[in-house]
Length: 306
Ligand SMILES: Nc1ncnc2c1ncn2[C@@H]1O[C@H](COP(=O)(O)OP(=O)(O)OP(=O)(O)O)[C@@H](O)[C@H]1O
Image 1: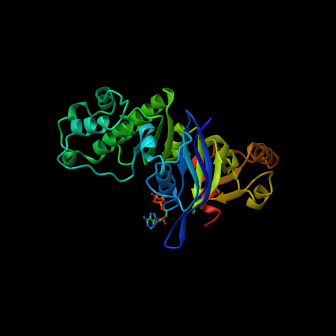
Image 2 (image 1 turned 45 degrees about the horizontal axis):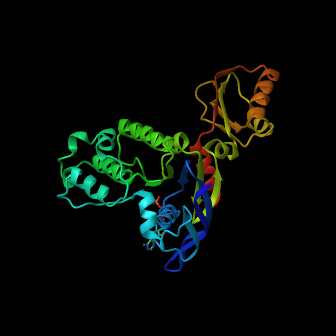
Image 3 (image 1 turned 90 degrees about the vertical axis):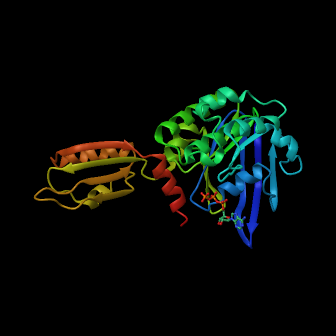
């Protein structure tokens, strides 16, 4: 059952639509990613889900409730880590956790949560004295302390070092395993690929694609990349005509040997490249075949309209 439903959402600032007809549904228990270039309308969309912005038109429902009209009830089941948050500089980590716990009807025990986020040693530290990464971890703890059914994480791991980032990913997987639905705004493709069950790619206020990470990668033109250095020159036009080849590039010629050739295509293209090499009695040095990444798919999807 969908726990978040967004239908034809529109939000206009100064006559310019920031969100222009966005619709999606998030199933209970999934990690749903929102990806998109800067200024695409991601934060505006999730802030409408949180009830922090009022849509100009369209509808948003969280567990069947309107986040603006039923704000108090929605905040009891929705935890939010905001993109840019501040707390009183003199508040300690412990005080912040106790304060937030007191706002919820059924908070979780904040102590293990603080430990899990590496804040156990910092409970007496004042907010103003925390590092950027420690503040970030505190905001994640505050988003989870109410024992939410839905948690909205905007730029979850921005500012975290690689170890803290991986620990946070593991925590989010544990949170999901406990049945919590996660709405995740991110710029990190590795994060989206690892965590998300489905991803909505938003570009210029509209949904450019909505699919699983592997579905998005599969859609990208040239989802397989073949590269090699031929033992003697090959005509790139011949490669470009191979089945499903979407692009052929040759790096600069070095010495007597031709440069490295990179072909984007599909598995069919790989077989065709190998047959062509055999026909021409050309040996491929350092032959590599790799799958395109979510990065490639993202550029493909959001670059297409720019
Ligand atoms: N309060 C506001 N007043 C006017 N314009 C706004 C306001 N908030 C956002 N915008 C504009 O709406 C558009 C979408 O902004 P939004 O913050 O939703 O994008 P985003 O996808 O989250 O971007 P980023 O990845 O950079 O955080 C941008 O062009 C932004 O300048």
